[in-house]
Length: 89
Image (cartoon, rainbow, N blue to C red; front, side):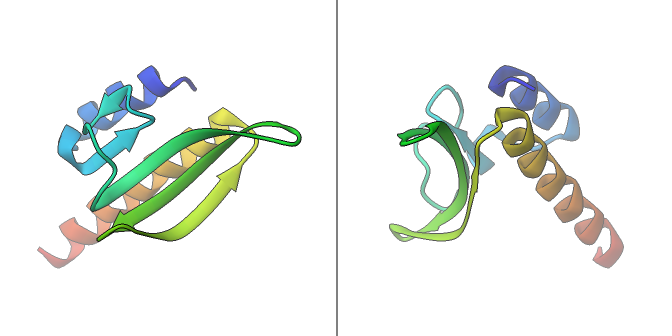
């Protein structure tokens, strides 16, 4: 899955662009107070870091070496949050 695909899948779920940051390409223009995916270079090639940033501090950092896995992780996190919201609303 490409970042663009993830962006459109999140839009289909009704997730506002202000709720996510996809390496500055899609979603919000900054990564504060939202789930974010950034691409970083490492010893073994590219890594995809998924995290939640709050007040400048990174929380719940997950690192993937496969872009598809990183995108699926974010997608599944949003699906879970919708299911929880629906259950308790």
